[in-house]
Length: 260
Image (tube, rainbow, N blue to C red; front, top):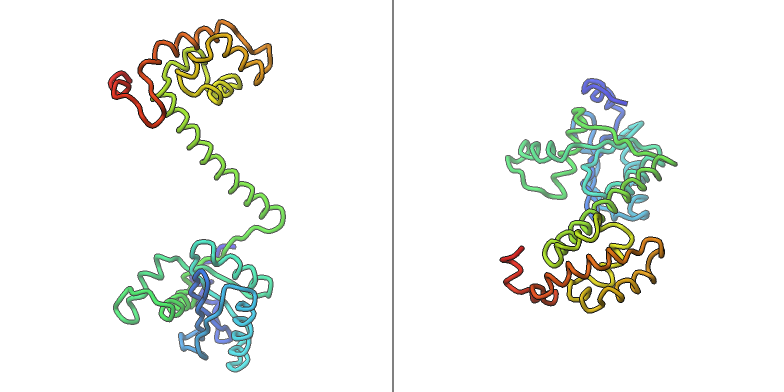
């Protein structure tokens, strides 16, 4: 649900404990304040482990009890993925978690000591003050099947990026070492084209096998109906024309650069 800044401010009452937590990889630091910005209790350092989170929860409950607070709101600066486990633990224990914009945190640091220097002690207070002033957003964390779909989509997007990189590398390879390859194949991603690249990546490999060797290689890799002697002859001829210009992978003749 989206709230206006006034509605966010009204959620922080005199019965609310505002906690700012500086998120890190191994250890987090938290500080607690009331709705006016007065610090309550001592700061806490706790590990990004279940035991550390239980320690944080016990610390917050003690401060609430000592200062007659009825609810707590925890503000964090989303740093990478380190905050996700902590947010889930607090949410499962009925504690409201909100996010502050890292850019706002950076700009607001000057208010206390006129510097933007980052520190584990300074940042939690800056975060808590932003929460107190209603300058935060509520995280939208999917659950159940929606969480699984989100993970699946992230994996899919990463695989697509890797696939795109690999395709570009293959195209780069063909452009440098065997540009005539596509004279025999209209699409290098075809099954028979891929089989050819696996067995005969360089023109010299194609010439060495010859037409009969190419056909024999295809028989072991693809459906016999996809085999074409005419295509094998075209591939062999294209490879023969450029054989003299191509040397082993990491020792390419300067003539290649001049010709292609």
